[in-house]
Image 1: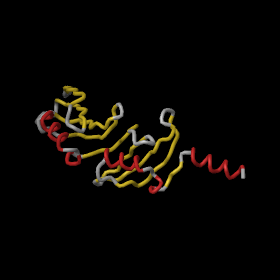
Image 2 (image 1 turned 180 degrees about the horizontal axis):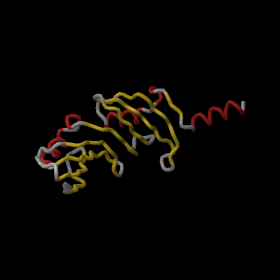
Image 3 (image 1 turned 90 degrees about the vertical axis):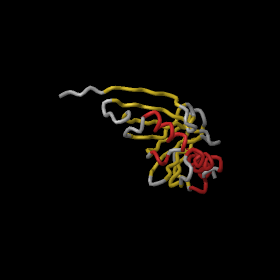
Image 4 (image 1 turned 90 degrees about the horizontal axis):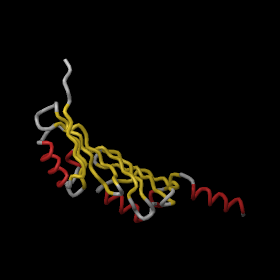
Length: 155
């Protein structure tokens, strides 16, 4: 009997893969909120100092593989996904095009900042490949951070 209780206790607190059907509803809703249209592929449960139990989920959305770490009530702890501009919300697309003057986009990543989902963008400014712009944008299109840097050409 003690062995059975120990096995049940250790399996519930270990970082183990769990079936998708065992993921709590609040966590599933949070995945859909932060990554609309995402299909869960894998979920693991691990211990966290603050939230005690954290769900690490891997998902598939629009030919992109992403990962998200959520608390037991769906609190966003971390998210990581590489995107193309068409996968970003319309407000984010508009802000990116406006701020970069339709420059060539190097990459767009979905990330977490203070418990909120943000889009990090690195792009060239306009037609120039000498000026790079880095943006951090909220899902509503608000700019959180902007950094412009000029590259020096060495011949």
